[in-house]
Length: 65
Image (tube, helix red, strand yellow):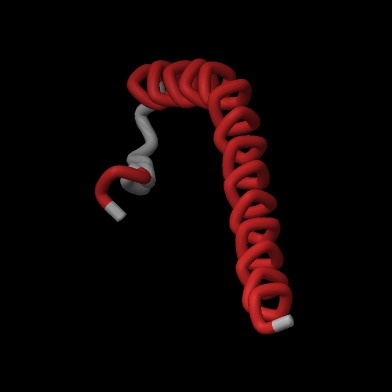
């Protein structure tokens, strides 16, 4: 009986950890799909701001955060 009781929390923990891993994988897949479009948009905005005579606020860089 003790073995069964001990196994239940471990299997519950493994299930929760598996859900977390799968959720993280889906999040990273969405990030990888969206990133090229975001980079392209940023390049266009930067290019447009160079042609503009108005000063622009510094752009946000996720790597600097």
